[in-house]
Image 1 (cartoon, rainbow, N blue to C red):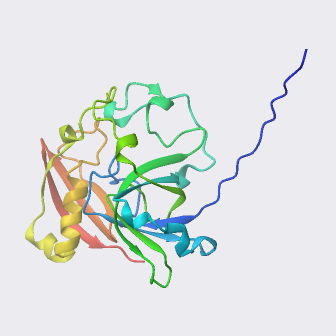
Image 2 (spheres, rainbow, N blue to C red; image 1 turned 120 degrees about the vertical axis):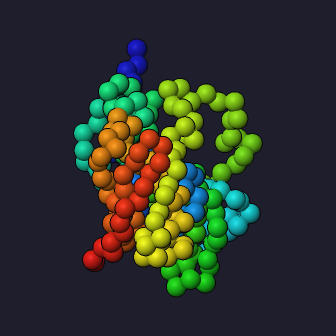
Length: 237
């Protein structure tokens, strides 16, 4: 009888690029990609991968998959069950039934829209994308084209998750804060905060929250289904 010996191998991934976004911290990042389409990302390849030939043909695709690392969770222990914020933080689900960052391998997957491929940029080729859900400086492990006929399953079920629109709120930003942020950043802040970054189990109308976005510390509170932005202060670098 033959004995099969399975050898454990250490898998090493190469970081091919880093993405730069306005998300300065984890709190405030949408729960999934595409929920804040006005937010942009800039994918800059590592020097050894800055070859225009590597992105040849990419201009023909509208979307790509980003395979990336939960770099803030590198080296942290994983758990077979986690408490999804969408369930109030009280019910446990299997880690493989969630997108929790506390995984055996801290790898994330996001679908983003391509808004440009810059070949003549000093750091080129650079890929510009819309709707990322990645913190600034997140390592990118791979990039693959999104293929509608294979990647889209219109009648797929989503288990214990509800539709994203069920968690959205109306955002109110006063004029004085809009003047501080400017028109472009104000639109992005609205797009991000409409998804209500609070954990679903936190529903204290008297509590003030703060999120770092675009270099600003933005405070807000929520009353019922209306999110009121209070202040915006520039972060000192």
